Amino acid sequence: MEDIKSLIPRDKFDMENVEKLKSLETAVLKPILPDLFEWIQDINWPIAPELAKILVSCGRDIVPELKKALASGDDCWQFACIGWIIKDLASEIVLEIVPDLQRIAYHPNSTEKYCEFDVEAKEILRAIVAI
Image 1 (tube, rainbow, N blue to C red):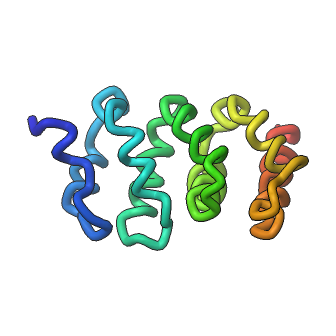
Image 2 (cartoon, rainbow, N blue to C red):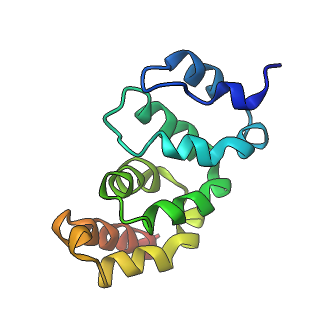
Image 3 (cartoon, rainbow, N blue to C red):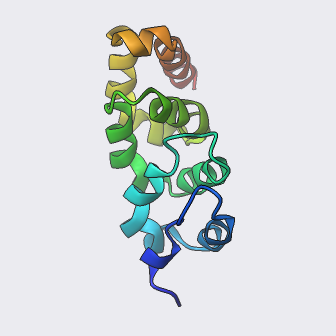
C-alpha cells in the first residue's frame, strides 16, 4: 500500500486521492486527519465536500481537529465544520464538543455573530437536548 502521506490531496481538484481515501479505515487515516481538515477550510473547493464525508466517517477521532477549527476564528473553516461535519456526526460525538458549541452559541465573537454561527450552534445544542 502507498504511504498514507502520499494520499493527502495535492490540490483542490485531487479527486483521485480523495477516492483512494474513501476506502481506508479510520486507523489508517488518523495520522493525516490534521492535513485532511485543512482541505475543508473552504467548502467550495471541489474536494472539500467529499473530504467532509470522509472526516465524518472517522467519528470520535476528528474531535481534536474539530475543536481546533471551531476555535480558529477562520469563518470559512468554522462554516465547513458546523454545516458539513457537526450536523452529520453521531450525537455522542457532538456531546464532546458541547463546550465549544456553547461558547459560539452564547459568547460569539463578532464574526461568529455576523455569520450567524451562534444561531446554528444553538440549533445543534437544542437538537442534542431533544435526543
